[in-house]
Each structure stands twice: as structure tokens, then as C-alpha cells.
Amino acid sequence: MTVSTVRDASRKINIADRSNRAREATTRATIFAEPDNLRIYRELHPTYNERHLMAESEDSASSPPSSGSTTPDQSDRDGSPNESSDTSLEVHTFVHKEFKEITTVAVKEIEHDIAGGRETVVTKLFQPIAKATKRRPRFKDVKFKPNTTILEAEASRTSVFAGFYTVFWIGAFILFAKTVLGNYRNSGYFLDTHIVSILWRDLPKVAISDLVLFLLTFTNVALQQAVIKKKLSWNSTGWVVQSCYEVAFIGLALWWPMYNDYPWIGRVFLCLHSLVLLMKQHSYAFFCGYLSVVKRDLALYESILAGLRNEEGRGTPSQFQTEQEERLLDEIAMCQTELKSSLPLSKVVYPNNVTFFNFFDYMMLPTLVYELEYPRTESIRWDYVFEKTAAIFGVFFLMIIIAEQYFYPIVMHALSLRALPFLEKVKEYPFLFFELLFPFLLMYLLTWYIIWDAILNEIAELTHFADRYFYGAWWNSVQWDQFAREWNVPVHLFLLRHVYHGSISAFQVSKGAATVITFLLSSVIHELVMFVIFKKLRGYLLVLQMCQLPLVQLSKTKFLRGNKAFGNIMFWIGIYTGPSMMCMLYLTF
Picture 1: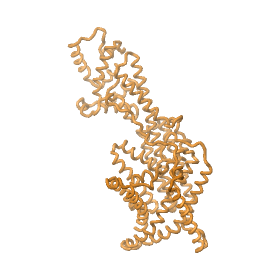
Picture 2: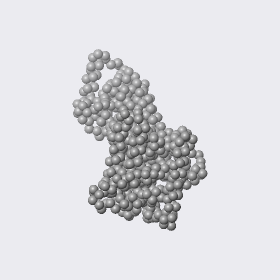
Picture 3: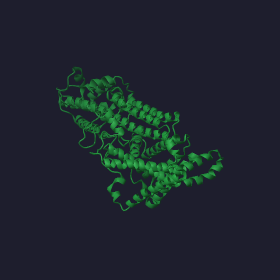
Picture 4: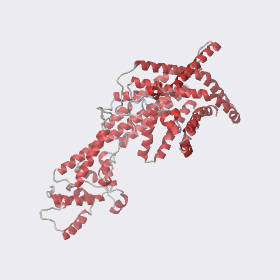
């Protein structure tokens, strides 16, 4: 950024009255000491000459200038640099003092005009050194490292409680065998066909719809390439275009299954997968968009540093110039660190990552948070892939058996109550609720296992993804916020980076407010899934999930904080009763 560029931009700024500027500005800006800056400042401030002459007369009364010195005006008119180091220091001191009267608001307007919307770089650079703060990386809150899931860890396999894991699966197999044999004796068929028929209905259409949604996600690469080529500025229009696209994407994903009357299993599958695709796209776009701003900032810092060193070549640099140069070098180093992967020996640097292949690779990985590079394994263990594939199909058929044997009759009975008066439904509700408790809990656990242990681990193995921390020991939770962190780690990391920390940085809210925003967004999304399944908006799940916030505060009281056993009991009571209560409410009322 040259002095002439600043001069041309600054001519467009209307500086308010001096008293108004002093009242509005909270932080005064300082600008590098160089003779040309006097000309810029004089153009901005018509009263400059009067004040300078007054200051000059006061200085001459106490100490006359030396014969070899030249005034700032003379140097400016001659167009030549000041040769005297004493006079250069005098000019720097005067300019440093006078330029404090340009407010931060004015410098922001200059930067906005030059860079097309970036209002952070020059303002921060030109703040007084005493008040300067170093640049903080925005997306360093999530660290990926080689890891294994808890049930796959060696400590779990050799734990004194490992036998309970074996007992659970033996019991699940006995339940499966008992149900299959009972169906064959009663009807001559091993499986009932109600759930299977729902699964097979419109399956090709659901698969094609899902493929179309996946192909639409590559729009993000084209948008980021437009940002790199400076056809779009991320801070001004890029993020707006991205946000509009995301709204249209999720709107299409929800409307299309409803319009084509897909079965509820097909609708909920497309809804959940589209939400996964939406989160992956959002993380990719806003991470790369932020790096585009960092890259522009880096170019600006390097340009300013080059101009500063060019000015230093004309004479002895002042202390102010030296401090600013050190500050610039720190900012440049920080930008360069942000633009490359944090993994050791990695050579991935933005914008080289913005390719269709890189995006496809990211979309295949079992994570919702984008990084330039992830830790990878060296090879695929095909015996492990076979083990997880068998687990996926085995648990899937077990879930079908449970749904057919225990869910379907209760659900049909609950639907038949809709025509009854309200009081009659209230009388029947407790019986249906208790009938559904144990089957729903078993289905709840199997759904968790098939997704977060079997499917995600198999995808991670096939894609060489080394960080397998997909869940924590959520079954030991004593607080609901602990459960939210450990039940679904990929979603938790997304909410942590893009909702919790994003709301703090974007809206300047407190941590408590950011927590409420995060819980509210999660509750709204869960309620949206209920709407897709039941085709009616009731808000039961939203209310139940938001009730976790006061329960979290209650669990932090003096009595409950040290009583982990009681906290875990209350947690499991909630897991037992919550899903069944919510399901019956949507079915019956």
C-alpha cells in the first residue's frame, strides 16, 4: 500500500469537525512518519498550516532552529527527503503528534475503500504500540490427532467390565433368535414385512435424491475459487452468497421428499444426511473464506513492510518505525502459520487446497469440521472392515426385528387414539408410555452403536482417517452438558467452532449467551427432524431439550456437584423416560 494509494483513498473521506472526532473516537490512530504524510494530512485538515506555524513560533522562541535544518513545508515543496537526522526526528515527532487527530473511524474508511470491505487490518496496525494486541487465530479450537474409539481401545478390551459388553451382545443375539423363531412358528415367515416394506418403498428415488444433494455440494468449490480469483470478496459479498446457498440447499432437501411423499424413513434419512452435508459445507466455506481474508491481510502487511523499509533506506529509522516493523513481522509470521496445515511435515498451504479432489476427500471423511489436512493411517485393515460391515448388517436386522415386534403394534395403537377425546388420550398415555420404555431404550443404544461406532469407524478405516474419537464415555455422564459433549463428538466439535465460538466472535456475546444460542440451535434442528417424521409441528422435543439448561445449572449446585452417583442415576432416568415420553406425545396428541 503506497502513500499515493492512501492519498487517493483519503480524498474520498469527509472528516467531521475536530470536536466531534475527539468525542467519537475511542482509540486514536498513528501513521508512519514520512514527509509525504504531511501533504495528506494538510489536505484533510485545512487548519494544519495555522497550527504548524503557531507550534513553530513557540519552538523558535525557546530554541531557534539550526541553519542546516528544513521545515516540513520546505521539504514538502521541494519534493526531496529530509537529509538531517535531527530534523527527521523533529518531523517524526510532530507528525506522530498531529496524526493522532485522525480517528480510528477515518482509518477504517480508508481501509474499506482500498481493500473492499476489510476493516480490521490497518486500524489494528496503526494503533499505538502500547495498546496493540497480537492477532489471534480464529480456527485453532479443534485439534485432530491419531486416536481410537473407546470400545476399540485396548483399555476397554482388558477392562474388568469387558464381560458386560460380551453379555449385552449375547443377549441381543438371543432376542433376535427368539423373535425370528416365534414369527416363523406363528406365521410361517421369519420376518414381518411392515417395516421392510416401508424401507423398500421409493428406495431408488431416495437414493437418486441423495446423490443429487451430494453433487450440489461441489458448488462450494466454485464459490471459493471465485473468492481466490477476487471475483468475490468474502467479507462483503462472499459470506452472504454462501449463506443464501445454504438456506436454499436445506430448503430443497426438506421440500423435495415432502413434495414426492416419500415414506417417513426416506424423509428422515434425507433430512439427517442433508444436515450432515450442510454442516460440512458450512465448515469448509467459512474456513476457506477466513483464510482468503488472512491471505489478503498477509499481502497488505508485506506491502506496508516493504514501504516502511523503503522509507528507512532514506535515513536513520525512528523508534516508532522500528516498533511498527517488529509488529508487522509478527503479524506476517502469524498469517503464514494460519495459511498452512498445523500437522508436522505437511506441505498443504492455502489456496492450494481449494480443489474438487480435496473437497471430495473431505466430504468422504467422518468429520464435520474442515481442516487443511488430517492425520492419516498408513494402510487399511481389511479384516477390521469386514468386522464392522458384519456389525452394521447384524445390528440393522436386529433393529428391524425390534421395530416390528415391539414398536409397530404400540405405534399403531397410539395412532388409533387420535380420534378420541383429549381426556381419553390422557388416560391411555401412561400405559403406552411404559410399554415403550424398554424397546425404545434398546433402539436408542443400537442406533448410537451402529452410527458412531460401526459406520464411522468403517468409513474412517476406508479413508485412512486416524482420529477415531467419535464419542466419549457418555454413559458415565453426571450432567447434561457432559452428555452433549460426549454423545456425538463430530457434531459437538462443529457446534463448538461454528456456533459457540462463532457467536462469541461475531456477535460479541458472553459465554453464557453463546451456550444458550448453541442449545437453542440444536433444539430447533431436532424439532425440525420431528416435523419431517410426523409432519406436524408441536415443539415437544424443543421444550424438553431446552429444559437441559436449568438441569445443568442444578447439577452444578453444592449438593449435586460432589454426588456423581446420584447425578448418573438422574441422567439414566432421563435417557429412559425422555425419548419414550417425546415419541408418545407426537403420536398421540
